[in-house]
Image (cartoon, rainbow, N blue to C red; front, side, top):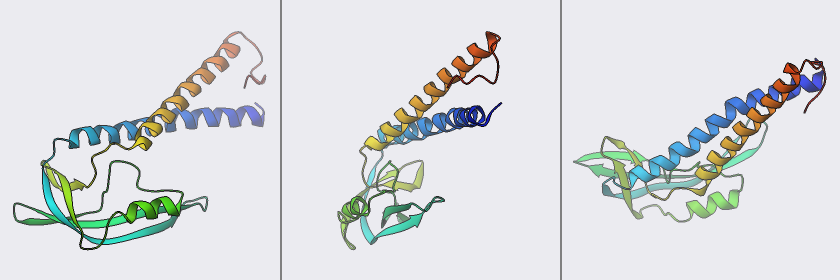
Length: 167
């Protein structure tokens, strides 16, 4: 097999693994947002607000609004930093800053907490469009990879040369 065919197969395998993972992450977050609509609320207070910067393995910067807040349920104090059910990171510092600027230290907030796990909480219940985009992209990757495997298998099963490139 030549290098191009090997790279194509590696890409297909990555899509067959990454696609379902992306799809399940997006659907899980969207599902959590739907279920959280029934969660009880408690008054909370913002303790700190900042935008954190991190670098990925390829050197790309990700900007994450970090909003820490406290709330009490049945006399026990809890702390959380989850704002919504989407991916907390942004590629744009301005977008992360815009989210962080909605909150101020000392601000009163309504905290939605999971009655089955009192330390799990969120400030916003809205499902994030990013969840659906992530699920859709994962689904598209998976379907595309399946069609690529199917096309390659047809060429192979038609007894054509395995070194022939079908991609």
